[in-house]
Image (cartoon, rainbow, N blue to C red; front, side):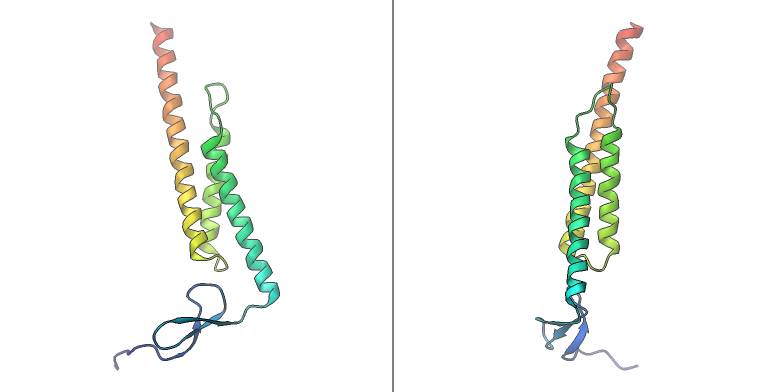
Amino acid sequence: MAAMGPMQPGWYPDPMGQAEVRWWDGHQWTPATQGRSAQDRQRRNLTILLVGALSLVGTVLACFTSVSLLTGTTTVWVGVALAVVAAVAALALRLVGLWLKVIACVLAVAAIASAIYDEVQLQHKRDQIERIVNG
């Protein structure tokens, strides 16, 4: 079996996901790309917008929703679900660039951490009330 040498110059699948193919000059990826139509660019932009918006809305709901013993944390967990769905979509969709994949995952983790923090704080309050009531 022959050993693989350095990649020869040529068109290869775009590792950045911005086009179908990108030119490798033998040393580095160049800005030259081919293979995306105007319709593809529109679909990609819409996908990026939707994933980004879903991620942001989910994180805002999870991190900035007021919770209390009366209201509970349902809205917070809905936000977590939206943020996680956005992160999974970002990871699964080839149209979405690495930068959005990373941002969506970071926001999903922040949403989960915030929701867990809210649950712990509410449980402490429930325990305090129970101690007061039970004497």
